[in-house]
Image 1 (cartoon, rainbow over the protein chains, first blue to last red):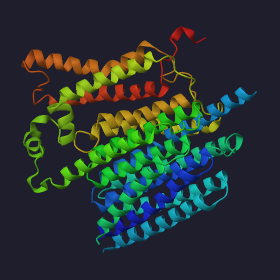
Image 2: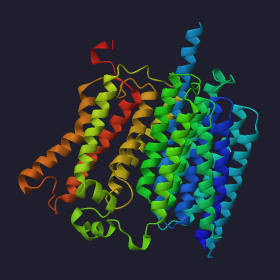
Image 3: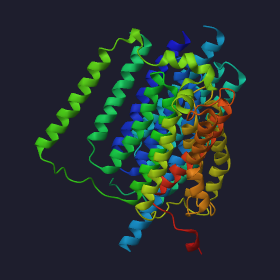
Image 4: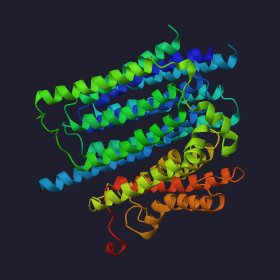
Length: 94
Length: 98
Length: 310
């Protein structure tokens, strides 16, 4: 019973994830796209937790841990790369 | 359904509600900085409530602690990276292209 | 319609929509960021298909690390997509070939007799107690088919050498220096990443996990150190320690192979009472090498040698 409920919530949350991906696709600036990826990362963490309940495999929660913990290196690399690009275009046009 | 499952279901539902709010904000707000604000609500409350729901269904205490750790990590990440992202977006990337 | 079928339909629709949106992209930024998102969603598909080891690897490597690699490459090369210059007949041929291959695979999958289970599951399960671990994936990767993993380590080393032959690494992207939030991010996360890496390494013996996933998580810690601009972060200089760590897995593996070849007269045949320890030692070296290999691939070229730093 619980696994069926969790499956329905997981399906619903997937639609929310699709919305986040729309922001990645549309967002005019690259920062918008990164925000979409951030929401995607959080949704995937939540979905991993829900799937662990839905498929009755608590081992899937380790995947949620990996999603959560690897979100910050990816975000940090993005911010640093954007900063590098901004500085290089500024020095090009200077 | 015993009481743990009922509690978990309501927590999941509440968490999904905040995720919908975060996603709606991400889609509808006009600006990078405002969208970031909406995003952090989904990160903190949305994931937190779903994590709490999962924790009540954990087999043992370690599973519950692991889930709470996940929540703490996501909160820390979204708070600091949110600020860094906002700082960077504010000082550089408010141009349109890409 | 059971909830599981509903989930599968939604998941499939999201994946297909994502692929379409990625391929029909007008700008490089959109295409690359959608591709990073695709990595994450595919990890979800693996979870649904009941392959948690692959899902772990996809989440760590395919989503997060490949994402970091792509983001760094994109950050230093702003450019629009090139014009579509190929004539339509070539594009039609490629499309036709792709559809044909996909159709053949789909037909093969549908006509497979799933009841007969033609795979090697039963053989592996029968021999699992001798392997020293209880996770069949780890048993296959590090015991039954250890030779393949040894060659993969050699391939990683060759890849590092090839990337280093391409030239010097470009300037390392850095977070804003002297920002107190950098340390606020690093202080909890770098130790946590190391602990999670160790946890995944240990877990691989009896649950989904293992050395590759642990190495990917560890390289996340190394990336954080590098990007935050810590002065002694690894990967900034071409030192002997860096090279030794990258080569460590292959060297350890070769050592074990030589020892088993000499004592048991069969290459990589672990004595069953020692198998668990040997696997752990090899996996530990593998974790370190994989982590540092990701780091140098992220740098994308050879770092400057030690003397250049003032």
